[in-house]
Length: 251
Ligand SMILES: Nc1ncnc2c1ncn2[C@@H]1O[C@H](COP(=O)(O)OP(=O)(O)OP(=O)(O)O)[C@@H](O)[C@H]1O
Ligand SMILES: [Mg+2]
Image 1 (tube, rainbow, N blue to C red):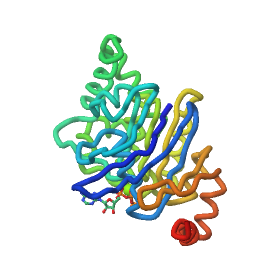
Image 2: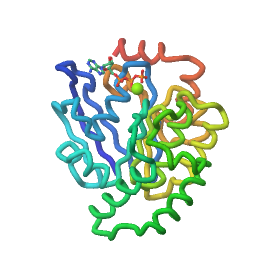
Image 3: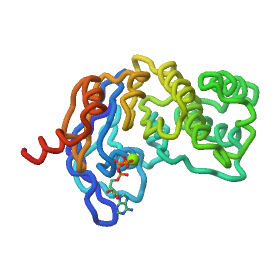
């Protein structure tokens, strides 16, 4: 699915990613944890093609294609999806029209015909139920005036509509109440298939109790410094990061 090798990236001349190595196989869920400012959001921004970041070294191969050379929209059309830590608002564009454009652009890229209005509405109603999103949201402008939790839930709905091969969820749990977190996690689990993968970026083990990762990584100072199974998330919950930082400094 995804193979990242020795990836280095800078923003405004400052190196943030300092040699990331990461292999994700079809069907796997990987969690990325790590202290604030370690580069987690940067990694997701670089993978999805945020032009603010410059890749200075290394590569990222997504289903055989070189991601770094692709336009951000083509990365999305190839099946990469990023749910933002801070979702953006798009005033004046309804959710329905926004999603219709996104879904049909992807279909065009895949050589498929546009969905008819009826087909699109049917798809939207089906996917809306996955995250228990009220239909009134689809008539509103994208994220405008949505509460933090509503934005997050809405992002998972967008993800369901686009059926990505690899979904990157950047702190989807932050700002969600317990019930909303359960709904979002259930949504992610329902969409997960043996052919799709996910990267879940989170600070809290409780989300990983709901979305069970196969692998847990710790990112620190722009590098993955520890990789283990789900038990690592539990250990971090109990012990924090100091012991991992100490290991790195010693090394
Ligand atoms: N425009 C910028 N100019 C300079 N430094 C930046 C810029 N954008 C991000 N950084 C720095 O890059 C580092 C990594 O930030 P990033 O958002 O990737 O961290 P994170 O691991 O996602 O943290 P958090 O857990 O708080 O979300 C931080 O030190 C941040 O200040
Ligand atoms: Mg972040």
